[in-house]
Structure formats: C-alpha cells, structure tokens
Image (cartoon, rainbow, N blue to C red; front, side, top):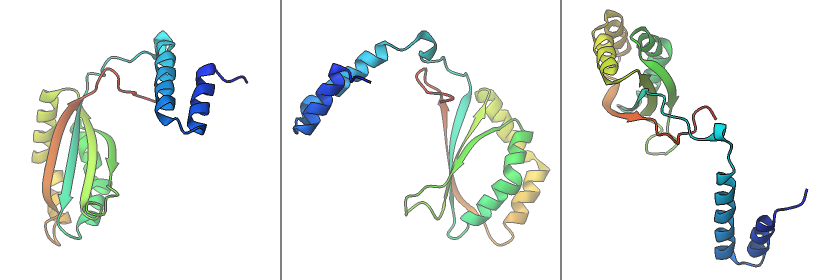
Length: 158
C-alpha cells in the first residue's frame, strides 16, 4: 500500500529530527481525516442519563471489607433501587490504592437519583448489610460524589 504524501512527510520529518514540522503535518493529517468521517460516525447525542462519579475513602486496612460488601451485597441493592452499576475501579496511585474505591453509576435524572438514594438508605436490607460488615469497625471514612452528563462528543460504545 502506498503511503499518503502527508504520511511520508511526517515520517521524513521525524527521521530527520524535524519534530515541530512532523507535529504540524500530523495535525493536518488528523484534520483531513476527521472531515472525511461518514455521517454515521458523527458524534451521537447525549444518552440523557445522569451519571454519578463516587469516590469512597476507607479507614486504614478496610478496603477489602468495602470490596466484599460491594461484591456480595451493594451492587444488587443498588439495582433493587434503580441505580445502574456502570463501572468500578481501584486506583494504581500508591497513595490511593490501599484505601480508595471509585465507581460510576447512572440514573434517569436528578429526581430519580434522589429517590433511589433515599430508598437505598432506608432499605432494611442495606442497614443489615452495613451493620454486619462493620462489626469489626467502621469501613468508610469519606464519600465524594459528582453528578455528570455525557457530552455530545463522548465515544459511547467504542
């Protein structure tokens, strides 16, 4: 396959040490490629969902207990109350990896989020799970929450 002249220019500039020119050529190449996208590759409108990024900081040594509680109980309880589980992570940063759980859940809208969290907090099953999991001591030190909406250029489903 024959290389496009711009690709050859990028390669030539990068080989000769002309990085600024190579970067400009790469930017032009990206601009040309982006204008050639098919209509069905165009950004999709927002899903309308309200996403919530939650960060839990545990007390020292309590992250395994939090993981067990989420794995064995909390995800199912979230679903019971209309909270959609999207993804869960633990950081790799040395300062955070021993005491932090980060996750994203989704709601239909702000009012649905409010109703779901109220119902979850009042659920006797949740209270029982929380109390049983904290027999060895409190688990969570701090919870941070940020609500988000998807941008029109978000690459959903890719």
